[in-house]
Image (cartoon, rainbow, N blue to C red; front, side, top):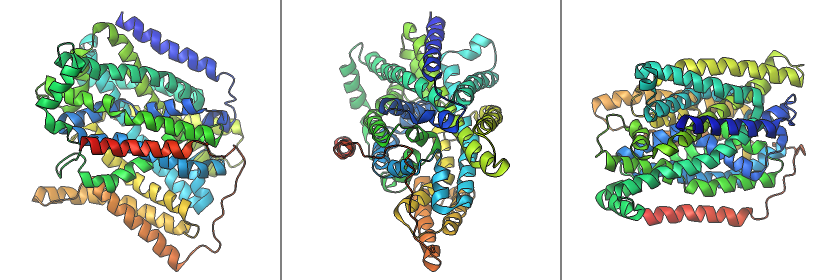
Length: 529
């Protein structure tokens, strides 16, 4: 029965996505890469949420909350503020320029060299961290929850290879041959299923603790584990409190405002109003995210008495323990959809970046629209195979998969956010200054975290949290840009040109809804501190 419901739901999503996209002209770059600039608010919101909410989030964050409790909530709820900022400030700028990629915006602002460097950083980030991490965490979750090694009669590590390649091949078909609209439509359907299925886990978990009563279970959990519900993280926490004002801001503003895999959904909006609606709807739902990605980890800590050798196994072990058999097939299908979503979204963005920013720019300047799309698809196949080959090598990564991903992402999130923020608010900073800041930031961050930090730790000397390191390097990058530009500024102030690709009138409820979202985040922190 579980297998039938799994196959049935997965096929339903594929069929709906096919019929929703068959009229989209995917022989043009706008049609393939941006869904024909036709995406509406609800579709954008659903795709944003499911692109983000995949197994590296569900498995990884619940693993951290199993060990550390509520402070990890910051990655979720502060995202809402970042989405408000994007809706107010960044998206109007992007849509005014009519861009398909963030590097194209940077080319308009700083020049071709900056665009090329940032495109390369995005592609390296997707290839080395995001794509393999999604595949690995997804395969680990499915293997653990549904006893795949036992079913296939193979060792856990060997089974991981099989599951990774199965997920990767199916995800590649969606992303490479369907384009953004296929990805976005399937995301929206799966988002509904994931919110329903993901919400069932804490509900059944609390019922398990409370002998059938959710409120008794919650009371028992908060009474027995009060330390897990303290939202203000201490110095040894996964998210020390003061990092909320340094690296945590950078992580969220980069991810929701400048990350190509995420912001591409909003770039495909039919107009600015729909893009803003999508971002703010997603922000509201994001505030409720900890119910799915944090609370189950604490429930698992209570049920298993904190006794798991690998914290990343907390969520899949909890699902096995408390989910009724009748729901397993549906939940497997939803989880599978979440894995595919993050994988195919990053892959689709990589295809977009290569096709428009490398192939068209450097390999075949006279390429037709069809040739650009074809070249992008070919690159996507190579990148997918590469990520499938290295994903299983993450087996047993030290510190947990979520922390690994966040630390590695800092190498490119800091400089990219810095140059975009300066590009939006300053008219005088030069492309050369931006390029120097990027190179400085990447090298300094990697040396700090992977060369200097181990030496400090080995000697027993305090080394700042990686989120603080991100904050420090961000400030230094800004200083470098303004210092170099003060010595040799632009000859003329930068003036942005409106390409009139879409209407850029603001949504009339943008301000009140945005302020309400920010107020809810502040209220949540005050209530739980």
